Image 1 (spheres, rainbow, N blue to C red):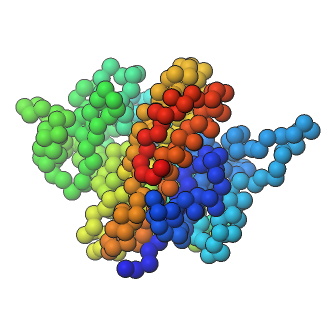
Image 2: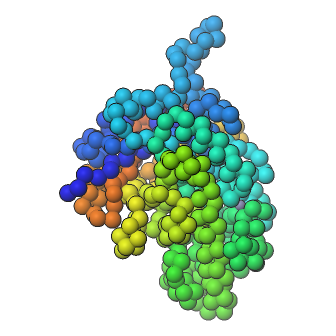
Image 3: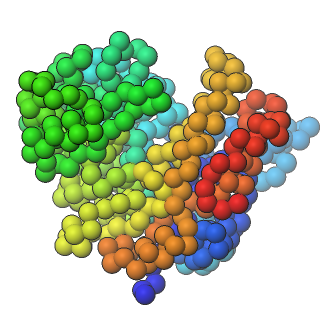
Length: 437
Ligand SMILES: [Zn+2]
């Protein structure tokens, strides 16, 4: 069996509230996770709450500061990302280091950079990567982080274009993005219908999105599917019922939209990583699915065709395609990539707002619901072994977050958010993640 790449991912700065980077390196190698010493580490660069360093664009989140003494001085020196990079290299001289970028940049609050749905409503926590301001802001971040000596940049694409239910709508889903930049780009890719087509109960997205009581169900799309096959899939999966005469026509519209959209997304990603490539840094992207994922609105084959990324980290791939095209792929050992991990940490980012508007109980309920989704962690020795045997993968990526660490994180972070210590019986409910103890 060949030596393969073993990539430790620290997806959020809050993981350092629990333990330092050298301790995460050790946890990754433990018997319950990978039994492998990491060859590469991914550190949080720019997250939902902001950059993890002193940036020209925006300050780092205040919780990253150590406490101050009576004289107003910090109780210990700290330099955040540059420190973590140094600490990684101290564990292993030739450690390859990546900066993790979540380009939805939730910390920005401007309507002019947000994604826009088909009704013209902007979404609070998602900026649009097709927006030229977001692209130029990313250039600044990349210059700043490249100067710290990282080897590459990883862009998280798992939730860049949300498609969701909303209590602002009588029926149907919010689809993104129809901002002026996206509308222009869609036009140039041959989709001239605009946003109006997606308003109301006859929205073609009903073929692939269904609002359920506990969330939204979706069907990932293969861009090669004929429209008739999409209709068949949708009926079989219970998203639409047979006998609707408009189905075939709507499926054709939807397929032509998602094909144009996937090209728009691929071009936006290529632009996002441009400054990194100019400085000979590698660009990787994280995807949640092998097919067109409806919260990415893009997929591997189109991104590869546009040469928008050097490599892909995804939980599943089209093996034949990867081998034929010699695509650089690592297996992301967590269901849907970072999608549920981001949602978990996002609860803490939004803690102040949730607590102020809805109270502690709603905060804890949401935290528990999102903690349950952490069951998707598949960083286990057996999975690592199978990736090492599989010829389509160069290596694997994993987050060594087990149930004890998860419960401890919930404890530390909720105490900070609510000012209260969680009673043992509440904390016990959070002991639900897999694997490890
Ligand atoms: Zn847009």
